Length: 265
Image (cartoon, rainbow, N blue to C red; front, top):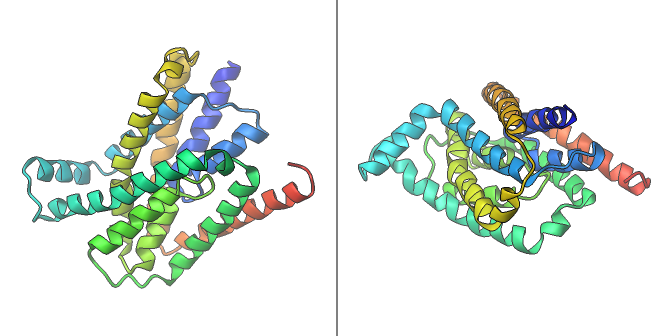
């Protein structure tokens, strides 16, 4: 029962923070430290699967359109034009994400690093208020830059959705285009992260004690909360209130830094 309760807590944290621009990885690291909740490796795998399921459910018509265009090698329709843009955005994401994960993983887990990342995330989110939404289409330059920040967002405390949407808005992309491209671009990134985890950590997954009940509960909590959080994000973005998430990131980051220098961490 205790394991199930912990699983529900982790699932809810993930469901909320994966979609709202406040960094799921940062919150999960803090949950591990302050709540004594260890996140099993298999949790990451289920997490990736759940993330994909939410995206496929929320953007089902768009995902279907892109896949059909890819099967037909059609790059002239609206959905077909998205394919090379997603590829251009995925390349820097993969490169930067692998470099940071390989060489700076231990440093990125430090509480002070996460705190600073939360503050930096807040600055980016608030700056999105200056976006003028002059462009109805995303070009290769915009796709590449969004891919770059998506790779940087592997740092705990930086929100993937927050950085990608904010960057698109700052580049003048309209809200609906920025929102949609952010999450369509996340699909290959999530699939890649899932494949890498399965390949490099298969032995650890095979001996995991994480049971079926925990997996079902975690998946259910993450899916339900995640879908609702994604709908909330779109409503907030559509009303021009996206930048307000910055205040939460600043408050959390400053609180962590204060606690660190006072010796509580």
